[in-house]
Length: 285
Image (cartoon, rainbow, N blue to C red; front, side, top):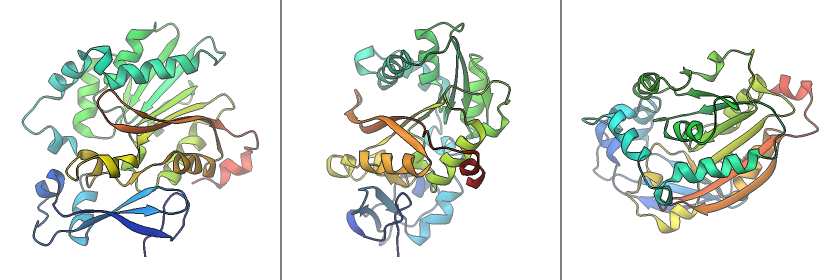
């Protein structure tokens, strides 16, 4: 029986049927004959859970940390990076994201911010973030486990790049951690967030989290990437707040938006709750 990874409820029902393997599954050799994949919806926190057929599970798990090999086969990551970077502000999800975060950070009283972007992808967000302010105010680092994207980010030579957040030196703890369209790829987002918080905890730490909205189930076509096999969950604002609360993070702001690209998105700013104690952190994996 499927249970919700966010609130542990077992009250889930089938919401959307996908009857054709996506390009990642096809690249992995998943048989399209009699293929069925369901998105289930949790009645309690409204999180959508992707239930892959047995024929896909192990094959997709094998590419989760290196899917850029398939996504950009035959094309250049650098050319895609440059193309996205040149988008007009009115068409740029990343420019809107940068403005949103910088507006929020005006209320954070610190002379110098250390920003860690976990799941940095092509690096467009961090590049635009840096260009919007001076290095004197922000020290930015990128974390990207995918080997192809990791080497691409290194070639940009704009900021330190790590394959794992545990490789980041502890002598410069972040004041802001950004997770832009990352948690939907993580099968156990609660454990993932707890491990990040345990490593980087400080009273002044702020998380910016951005995830796909469950409205995608209603408005997106079945072959849209948002509903693809690599996404484990889609979120309602209630589900995202529930996830953050389960990690002892207090939500400061949570909102659903329609991005310039047309994507349905939920974002939140959160910080460690005032009740956070060392014993709470010790209980995290």
